[in-house]
Length: 334
Image (cartoon, rainbow, N blue to C red):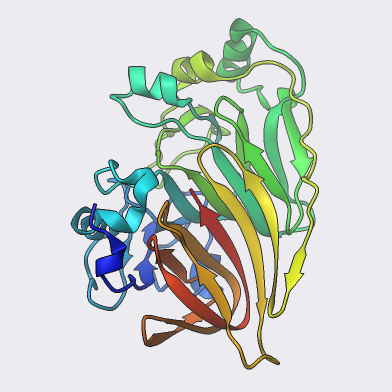
């Protein structure tokens, strides 16, 4: 890897997302986050992704119109020394999700199962940060009581799974961490930011007998799901203890940490300060900055860019930047 001592510091990379038009989606990502993606519904935007099912593209600057993966192959030092052997692949995937209807009841495998049975792919651990939720919004998180595979298989075949699902109320600013194997589903009325492993492996258990635009029911993956699902009764998750740490111009709090990622919420307000907020990545890893609300300006390496609600910015390792404005972000580290 080339030493950054002989090079100027890398610049932040603004990304253009990939949209997904799954049947349960709404249109809030276009109307409220100005995504300008010609899909209806617009269920998800993959904001920071090197996954082959949807790769982010650089929005502007010297790498404009290249995929993020292409840039990382050309500049592996941007990933940091911790990820130098990843061949241009990020270990994470960052999304916005707009659930106008309930998502399917599903489960994800862990890394071991995915590596053995899915051609060496990653499993999927994920975290949800709820941006907004209607008053009656819920989500599925595990089972209300322990079931055998036979009992669950019978309930699915009879279309009678819902009584066994643990549904929880959802509120804006909630945080949910989902380990691999957890049966789950985001409910209608939820607008969510998702941080996950770099995987698109989803095993559907149940889809409310819905049909797609062609009148076909979506494929279920019952046997694979039963092979990886936790079928024990699941304790309702508690919201994590949150502690805001204040400094001039900002406050930040830890939302979630696991072996794959750490997610913080950063509240920026430098409207009364002459100095901008300094943010710096080390040589170990990149970071990702996802703007949830507000706008402002970002300066780095002698250049300045405006940022707005919905922007996703990849921060290469050894990046130094300054932020000014009134905004809220998720800051993701690996």
